[in-house]
Image (cartoon, rainbow, N blue to C red; front, side, top):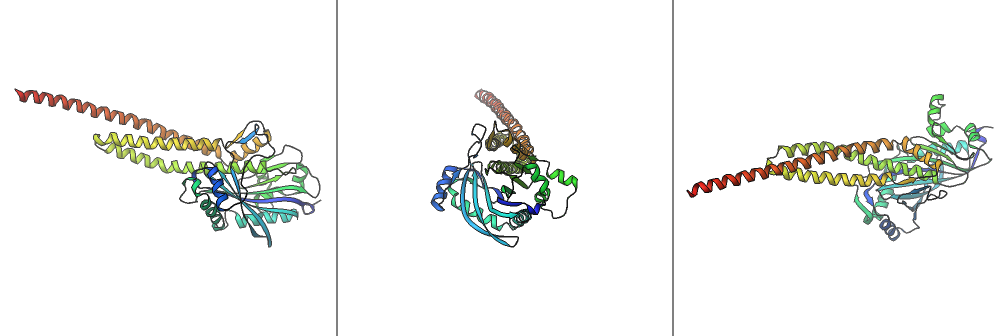
Length: 374
């Protein structure tokens, strides 16, 4: 039987766009501000089918519904649900979801690619920035040090199937449909090597569920209808956005730090100690803030016992290079910490030098005054 004989009775297509919008977000204030300005029922995200002791959010993000919109996908007008999820470490995850009902597999694939064209990285950014402006305006009192622009962002597409016209396990579904074509967005046949690479991160727990992850798309086959897998993929993307922000911040800070150190060393001794102390305090503040936020990012999702979701979550983190970015941030923070320690020692040394000079001058002054008396 061909792929065209498979019908998705129930499914969903989702486009995600994640932005770094602030240093931190007070989620309680954001919820109150959203209710006052927009209305609608907000909720704190919990993993629906996973026991809290097995895998849970460090600080559950806040999900808020927005007004639905109409989209034209592959020549068909559809209604899409829009929502935003806020993370306390400063990330907003916008989502546009299109329900799929009684669609043949080729139609599902075509709509997925059409959603990518309409909402993906090559689409005009005005749609997403307009949504983001609505969110930021509504929750402005909850934003700690809002980002001046929304240039740092990530996008992701999710295709989810909840029910088919016939019961199929993961192996049978993989044999009947071209998952590699769905995940690549290509209409031409792929080489065997490219197919293997695209399907390398495939995971199943039960015989009839399946998750396939790629860099910018994922396919989820979940007959039980829960959203836990989609939620952990979103968390991994949110962590990627925030670590990219701090990696770029520290990249910009290191050259400036070296310049300031040289400027301080070029000052006369009387001013150098004060400059070293001021620069050391500034670096200490940067390290403390970055360490606090990166720890929040690292602890966004705590995995203990759920082996399946832990594998999916770990694979998503690895695929998105989150551990590499985290290590890069740690290395740069270590350089700044070492510089802070060196500056503190140099400031202390300059103070001691000034103290010694002052003592010598006092001794000379005392000798001169003594000689003048005689």
